[in-house]
Image 1 (tube, rainbow, N blue to C red):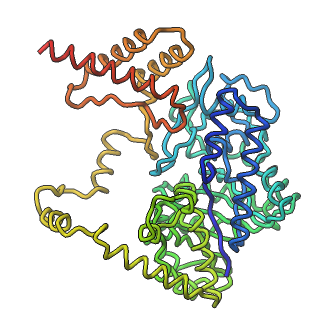
Image 2 (image 1 turned 180 degrees about the vertical axis):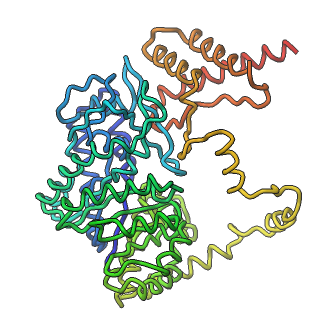
Image 3 (image 1 turned 30 degrees about the vertical axis):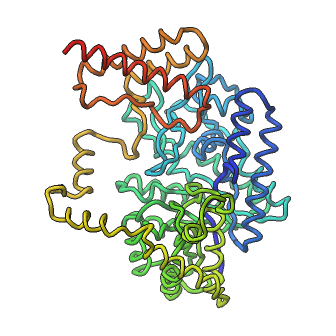
Length: 521
């Protein structure tokens, strides 16, 4: 029985990549230094999975920023303001797109579905000249192969890439991003051909947009794309991976009918309805990559429950076609529990970080193959029971208070799905949530002011005054009791030297306005 990992954390067990990036951005280390740290991390990750017994090990899931930006680089879809003149995209252009520079702003950042991670939104239009401008996927496959580790190269699928994009500035909002499919597929073909020539036998396309409610036009784009790629993919085993939610029935039918595709990956932790679709009609002779180990949290898997699900699936797809996998990339978990020295043994037994989830996946695969580690499963069962019954988790007073709320007026009259649908129609919200109000002039203006302050073109007093001015513009249309002043996005990509003055000035502006508003009353 085979095992698979969708993706793995890239920061390193002790945040090695974070520190290397900050050092490089500060000019304290060279590009070669950053590349050395990155290569060491990749090597360690691949060897770890290989030693754990994982058969299908991913490559090209490492990133200096995010996987969508990596795809933008691969396709050469660089906005003109970055003055890229062609050739292989280097750190200067790559990080300018991600973080901006002294003269131009970064591209928009938005949430990666409903996770705490973000991605840089591609800016596309009819005039974009796509070209094969980053050979990262092939380079990293060869790098792993040179270490004696056979991997499955991972690419963001072409249709999901386009649907995650937005029309560039000056392009009509009604522009069909999917109309660019014929322009990007030739580059995907080049990448695929190079991977085949390098010896790859499997390739993984992440198409997470298939979990969304897509209309027939968008679903047809998946069929069109993979039909076009079919001849190039010939000779490769092709996995199309989905995650984060159920795959709707119509999308499931589209996915399992794609030409040239060998295997399908599903999130069976959040996708309970998908499990029923698989049982009611999975295509014969295809592989099922069953995502039963949760890639979204830090809790140990209930191995007995997962094994029961997997054994049920054996009868549907066949024992030789079932692959044990994670529900999504392990990017969203902590890296390794071994570094948690301040946790006691009981709590540690409840937890599984990325390194431990790799072991869980392989343990389940071995159990299906008749090599069940009874000691490992028994310890897991004891930990599951401990977590359910421990007073550290179960508090009777809290349970009674929660029970008292049931049926009370604290409950809303409509369920969350109905409310979300109403909000979508009323506010014309995007398919994917955004963490910023980047389309609002206030945020754009404050970003400009922040760059000037960072470049020491304006004083701290001028910075505070600018923030105050923009808040006043909002107060012209909002009541004071509903306006909260926040950073425009998460601060994890910023250094403390940037974060501290930015937050201090924001708080100073808010305090100044509170004082003035109180005086006005």
